[in-house]
Amino acid sequence: MKRLVLVLCMAVLAAPPIAAAKGLLGVEACGPDGCQQQRSDRLEEGAGGPNGPFTGLGGIVQPAAPGPWYRINFLLGDNGKLFMRVPLFYVPGSKLLITPGNGNEQPSWWHPRGELRTIIESLAARVKPYPTPTDIRVKANGKSVAAPQSYLRLFTIGSRTDKYPTEDDRVDVTFTSKRPTPWTTGNLMVLYPKSHLFIRDGQMVVIPADTSDRIVRRASLAPGSSFPWLPLAAGAVVVVLAAALVRRLRPRAAPRPVIQH
Image 1 (cartoon, rainbow, N blue to C red):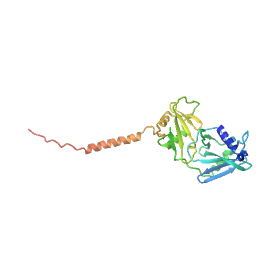
Image 2 (cartoon, helix red, strand yellow):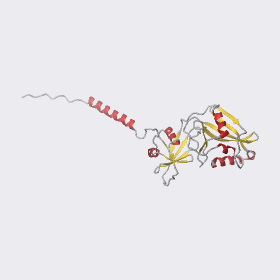
Image 3 (cartoon, rainbow, N blue to C red):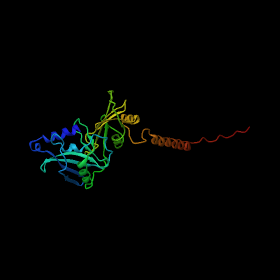
Image 4 (tube, rainbow, N blue to C red):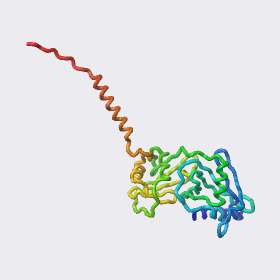
């Protein structure tokens, strides 16, 4: 929450015309076919100045599972005049907003509330969403992983903890795509493999030891992929068939004549 407050306050003070912006005029939702706006004079300002969006946001929560999504813009201005847009994303399946990553700041997930939620849900019903991302690129400590799409599981697995890592070893997991999405907008995750502690989008969670090990090896995180039973079984079948074929085609020695005395 503090990060979003800081971002919007800095935006409001960024230039003389913007300095007159006093609140949130409305919301704009965008999808592959275009954008729709909805304004409201019932979007309240927060205490202490132009903090309109803050009264409509809950605390940071677990990231949304990958699914359809929208680009969202908060429309800031005064007396109906628009001065600027503040970009976010919205995932309707989980009803969550996400503030994009910015430099060293990680993305944060929020529940819209009150009039803000009503407007966003109304826009989502009128705008076609972007599809679930399928061109995810994932690297662990700078090296590409196997089956990068399977790494989207890292946004939803694990349980929150108050523990803090004390080890020096870490694995940085980065997500990118051609088009920024809620899951590829500066999302840098950090794994501490010995303790299986995992930092993602402002949260510390504990993940299964097997998952932690696979991240270290940059292996697939798809369920059931921890050990390559299928390739090994297929390889064993090939070996057996090849042995049988060699045995069948091997020249047989001619029978020796029996010498009778």
